[in-house]
Image (cartoon, rainbow, N blue to C red):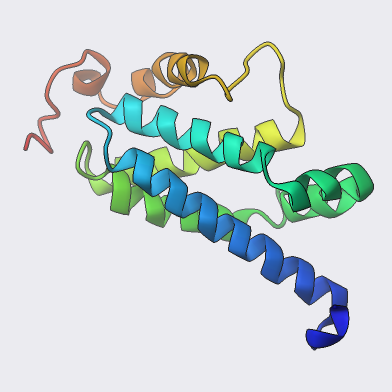
Amino acid sequence: MYRYFPGGRAELLEVTLGQGVDRIFASCARVTDHAESLAEAAAGTINIAVLELSNDAVLQQLLVDEPDTIATLISPMRIEPLVERASEWGVDHFSRFVEPAIAAHVGEWCVRVVTDHLRSPAPVIDITDAALARALVETFLIPTLTPAIAAGLPNPIRSY
């Protein structure tokens, strides 16, 4: 199989994981675009991304056979392109709830939660459980945004 990719195994891995990331962003978009609030959208994004990763046979096999490969790909040194993509995605999918700069921050926050979970899943906070993902968002994300959003009031910047 590697022979079909000019870069060999490394390129095959990059293409495979890239397709997985595309699929996860598309799944998250479907959930987020039907959400009625920012908390619901962010929690749904985190929850579906973690479920997709948990159910990805290739990724799960890599985590068992080659954990260093995955750790390298999501290390702080290599994660920036994914964080940038998540920020842009956040603007596209969360801006109906908040201004674009905050939407970008929410997208970044979500991807950092998901990659942290991938690095070391915590049984105490099982974000594969939608209710726990929602509690995480409502406890640690929403209060850090604007006071109006945290209080559940209409966002003065984005009130439509």
